[in-house]
Amino acid sequence: MNNRITAGRIQLIFTFFVLAFLALWVCSLTIQLLMLTWLQWTSALLFALTVYCFMYGGYFYFEILEKDKHIEIKYYNSFPFSREFKMFRIPVSAFVKYQIQGSLFFRRKLFVFQKQGAQMAKYPPIMVSAFSRENNEALHKFFAKVKKKGKK
Image (tube, rainbow, N blue to C red):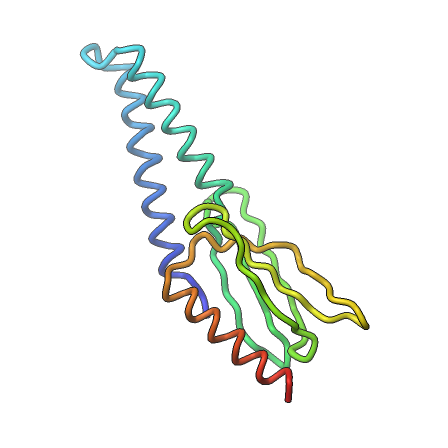
């Protein structure tokens, strides 16, 4: 299960807005008719806010699969620069539960819990803001299937 299509769409949308606001800002600096102070500040602010939301909004490419009796979760930020590729590997027998917290569009987090000895360990959050409704349903089905296998 992955969100390749949704993450790609979000990346295209953000790229369009970044380029549009950057072009508006450059035009407001170079074209005599558009040299308005309020337009320069507004376009620069919109450009900066769009880049900030894209970088820190939690729009990650996410892939989860079951391999050799382990759950492998691979993810990285969909922002094209300074990507960090990360991965968790959790034994199916140790998987306890998962939670999704946050608002619907911005900075949604997936928490995965694993049993270690007599205690429950919580993995660092994975941002899942780039999930569509279909991705959420597929994730719920995947974890339900894994939980059934873990109880056997």
